[in-house]
Each structure stands twice: as C-alpha cells, then as structure tokens.
Length: 224
Ligand SMILES: Nc1ncnc2c1ncn2[C@@H]1O[C@H](COP(=O)(O)OP(=O)(O)OP(=O)(O)O)[C@@H](O)[C@H]1O
Ligand SMILES: [Mg+2]
Image (cartoon, rainbow, N blue to C red; front, side, top):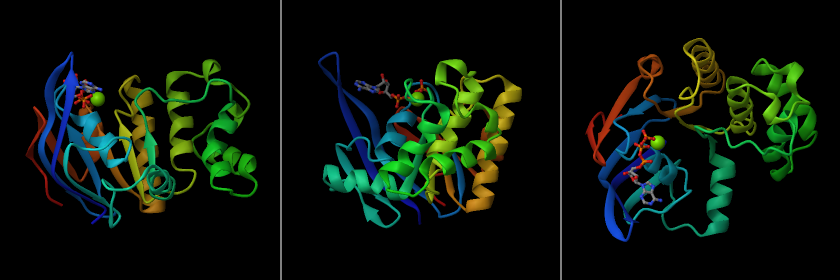
C-alpha cells in the first residue's frame, strides 16, 4: 500500500473558532494506482493532500506513506521523506519567479546532489514539450506551460508518489487534456502512484478510483 491514512482529524482555528476540516478520514491508495479525490469546495481536499505530503501535521490519526508513519517525523526526516518519496504539483504552480524554467526544474536535482542537474532539467522540459522554453522565466510562460514546468520539477527525481492539487484547475479544456495525458504517461512510464485532487470530470474519469469527500469525511471509495 502506498498510502494508508487512518482516522485522520484536522482541526484548525478559523477566526478564533475551532473548525474541524477533516473529521476521521480513512483512505488507502495502492502502489501504482491512479486515484482521484473530488468534493465540494471547502470539503478538505487540499488539506488532506497537504497532510499526506507531510506539509502539515494532523490533529489526530495516522498517515503511512510508502511504509513510513510520517505523523511523528521531525522536520529533517520529513524533508528527506518529501525529497525521496513524492512529487507535489500545486494548483498555483509555485515556480520560483527569479529562476528560468530549466533552473526551476533543476532545483530538486541540485538539492539531491544529482550530477548534471541543469542538463537533466532541460531533458525533462523536453519530455513535457517545452524544449524551447528552457531559458524563459515563469512570467514569460502561459498557465499551461507553467503547469508543465511544475510537473517536470515534480517528477525530476522520479518519485514513487505524485500528488497533484487541481493540476488542470486553471487551464482551458484543451490544455487541461494535454496535462492529463502527460500525467498518465508519467504514471505508465515510471509506474508512479498518482493521487489527484480535481473538480474536472474529464480528469476524474481517467482515474481508476474516485474518492468523494464532503464536510471533511470520505463518502465513498476509501479502500483500494
Ligand atoms: N490555514 C487554515 N486556517 C483556517 N481554516 C482553514 C485553513 N486552511 C483551510 N481552512 C479551511 O478548511 C476547509 C477545507 O479547506 P481545503 O482547502 O482543504 O478545501 P478544498 O476541498 O481543497 O476546497 P477547494 O475545492 O475550494 O480547493 C475550508 O473551510 C477552509 O476554509
Ligand atoms: Mg483545494
């Protein structure tokens, strides 16, 4: 099992009041699966993805990713876990504005001490159809191009797990279809497990399983 989340509770203070964002979420995702999470705005999808990525800690519950219980890890171990295990594609791309496309993709490679990071970054950009955009800065790229750079960066270290939060959310349907094809190709070629948050029916339809969240609870599809 790639992901085993059990009875995950997330409570946050919202304007001074406690708010239960996740209310006992249990979710399993098998290695090699393509799984989509859908649900209304505010149902807790991004929060859940962030917890699985170790970007935040749950109030209660356990989260095992690739056999590691991550809820008890310290900051250094969490950083290593993120580097070694997962790629994260954010809805709003999160590219570094002062770096070119190639330099953005090279960041995780350099952090991991990989040789020839910039050359490999250019190869990765070519695989997402951006060979001729390597020297462009994020502001010089369209939304779909920035999203492809973000995907190239997320898969640079060939993570066994790719998490994507609304990867087609800001894109028109044709560009969205390109991104979907790209994510699925990466899944096929590297056998990576994909966990995607999406409102996009076309994207959800390509997943092997759709998990529905509402009010911080899983309505159906919790088990692999
Ligand atoms: N840092 C925070 N502090 C307080 N409340 C938060 C915080 N982050 C999220 N929330 C609240 O938690 C709930 C779930 O948020 P989350 O972003 O996980 O929803 P979502 O399902 O991803 O929604 P969307 O589809 O709009 O992206 C929302 O009601 C949100 O306002
Ligand atoms: Mg969200």
